[in-house]
Image 1 (tube, rainbow, N blue to C red):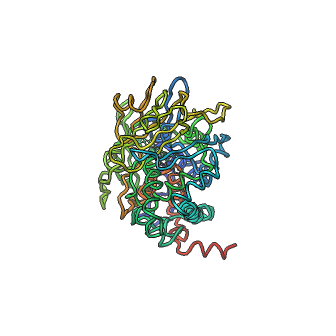
Image 2 (image 1 turned 120 degrees about the vertical axis):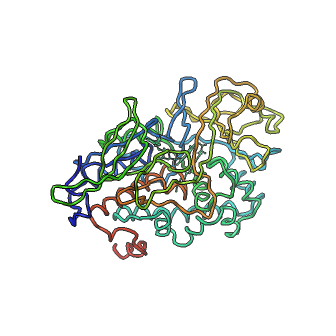
Image 3 (image 1 turned 90 degrees about the vertical axis):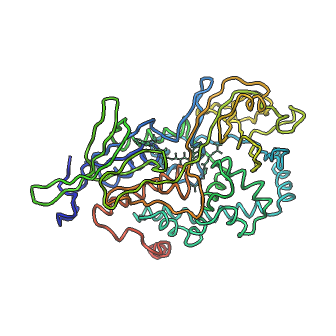
Length: 490
Ligand SMILES: Cc1cc2nc3c(=O)[nH]c(=O)nc-3n(C[C@H](O)[C@H](O)[C@H](O)COP(=O)(O)OP(=O)(O)OC[C@H]3O[C@@H](n4cnc5c(N)ncnc54)[C@H](O)[C@@H]3O)c2cc1C
Ligand SMILES: CC(C)=CCC/C(C)=C/CC/C(C)=C/CSC[C@H](N)C(=O)O
């Protein structure tokens, strides 16, 4: 299973492609890594991808009343170009998000209620928040402009050895500041009012990341981008992208739980030492192990997440101690109880999405009507008084008593509990992308922000980085002033 190349101690240049690459995790990070690694290293390298659960990972659906609904990662930004290209290249199609009317509830009353009349909404927003809303839109647009530099850098094959250097190349010190301050501080400094932060920004943090305005400013801004118009999903389910990438990369899927990675030295006939990695994993057939030239970790290594031991490394690869945030997604078929939200007339209740402010008495972060992953040709806005499928995000499982308060009648309840995303707590020190020579960690990027596109970007970065290391092309790693350099390259 070993290549002629593989050892720098040989004094030989690493000129031949690696023989075997292992990827641990078949979520969007792992499967897009397989896709990009195949592009970079060519058809002869053997790529094994280990998965202990289901392909898709945090992209998953639940079945309720015979239809499938997104239970994990559900919406994609219109400027998330890797996701967009995957869908195009794999022959999948886009499902547009159904129009919804959103209300913001503070535990006592709605502080904002959207209506079907666009002009009326604008007047209400200006009345309550001045021009904060318009400014936020421009603020997020500026962030997206800078963020999108990554696609150009990656198309010129530039890569980064740390999350910090990647972010710095995109947005300079401003992005670094965002990583080190909370979204509350960041937006206060940018001149947004506290009322706007409490009533608009916090509800966005709660629905998207189950957390408050104490999250770092970068993930906070990503979360606000998640409220932009034009969000979309993949027809049939977002996890189809993972299946498509797996198939097109011709990687071998190994269903098993990786338990350890160990460095192994092998003497060579030529006299040198070949360094390889032994991956041990448990399957239904027992404990097995294989040897690899390169290892890609595509799952969070945070506390209690993947339980992979790194054995015999010098310097040691220490366990990551940070925690992930629990989020429970509960799907309910029923009639929402308008009086729970202080509305007397049930027939007047037209909201299809309710976000909440940081009132500690509330047991839910959000509730929204959802459509199945397979489009049915019905784009009409249903009044909330009709029975439909609702998705509730909450930090804990909903009790029967809470369900009875939220719904006048319901049947069919399905719950999916997630360790969903990092608990964000700035100043944020991101874990290393390079864990050891030829061992790369895609999910280091989640400490800046967790989203499908972030994993895909990190996967392409790791494919480029590992390729540059293998072939000693160090001039494409951590280049300063890339934005300026590439301008003059035109
Ligand atoms: C409820 C929820 C809603 C979300 N909504 C959105 C959204 O709307 N938009 C968006 O962009 N993002 C969203 N996200 C975030 C997004 O889903 C994730 O950032 C992304 O899917 C992470 O992908 P990944 O491949 O990096 O990790 P994962 O999907 O977690 O994949 C890691 C895989 O590794 C496997 N694994 C772990 N340990 C081992 C082991 N020891 N051996 C073998 N296999 C192992 C796991 O089973 C898993 O399949 C949401 C997440 C959640 C939970
Ligand atoms: C990575 C960039 C630049 C943009 C991504 C923006 C985006 C789509 C953010 C959403 C992130 C997220 C974790 C959403 C979770 S909940 C989604 C939705 N509101 C739902 O109800 O399912």
